[in-house]
Length: 137
Length: 80
Image (cartoon, rainbow over all chains, first blue to last red; front, side, top):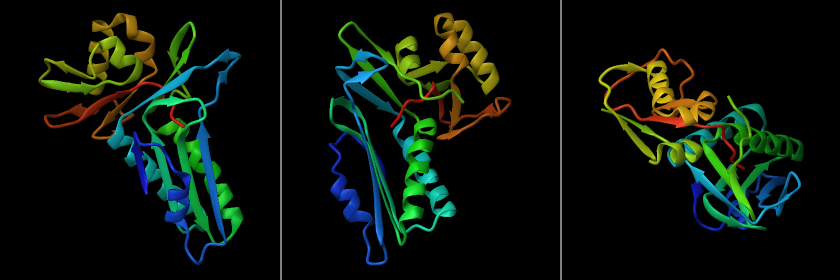
């Protein structure tokens, strides 16, 4: 379960997908739209993505995590479109026999996808808007 | 005819998400130069943008583009 979508994310679906009898741990992350950024009030965000390449990169990141740590399953969903404050933009669920592998992989996946996947967010305030940048090359 | 997919700030600067250019043969580097000339107001964003060729980043801009290639310009990303 690795994809981008315009649908509301249900973390429980990801958890259910990665759970298995061998897994002693399910580690999850949910990236939420907050109402402030660098001192400015945020009204909402718009996410745009190059969907097929974003999914390809998410798949690659997942495989890299599988190589580095002892994991069972990884699920990642990134949402696109307009997101209101409090909504989840990205969700990750990782199952592993032991928690250390899962927690380390979780950190790796979110940190890596933020600088790699072709997805962009535009932040909207009272007096304007701006495309944000996580990194350049 | 080459089509370049554009996103975010570049889509706004080009006023299209699919820029079509009259080019027969070109490298990514030549394509970059042409875009900088055609869209001087987007020069800074272009400088910080990477190419993707057939849905993978292509950092070697001496790479030639051929018919059927899917080319995209990837401005600084901000997913997650």
